Length: 224
Image (cartoon, rainbow, N blue to C red):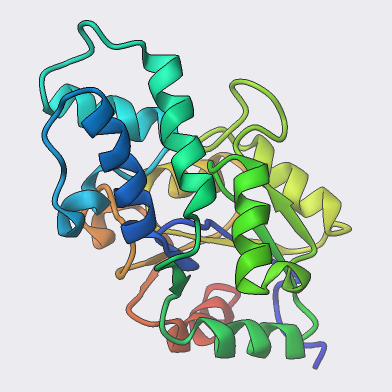
């Protein structure tokens, strides 16, 4: 099938393609416990996710008393170490994710990942879930160096280049994703089921979907 309007479709990872909330929540609570701070109920973890581990930890510490007396870099490393060792205990594709990727692949689309998660952690997670081979490229928040993670457009430009160019779209769940897509001049779809840092319909995406069954039709509509 060669008439699909996009040659490349990129995805954010946390809260877009994968529901990582519980595994991230356990890692965040591990760090908060080390800092002597109250734990975050796992069903509330999503409000802190977005922008990478440093921003998540910063937000959680600020919500529980601030940064005073905290060795932030050391605490972040403890968080990441715990997460790396427990990265796929509860994480899974959001409903419809596998069928959606199959449908795009059948249309000749190159699938890509652009996430603010560290690249080594993203790859480890996809390896453990058996998904790595599905992606033409996996770009993490540290892949291109400081200051080049989302919402800067650099990761999305690199994503398209690594996939050989052509029409591209991006799928995400936060202002970081929409901001990066806008800066890169790519159409963007937001998912309502993610870790949205604003109400989904207020993220500024070109389309918003409720389920991955809706993604292929949404992308076809965007190209019209």
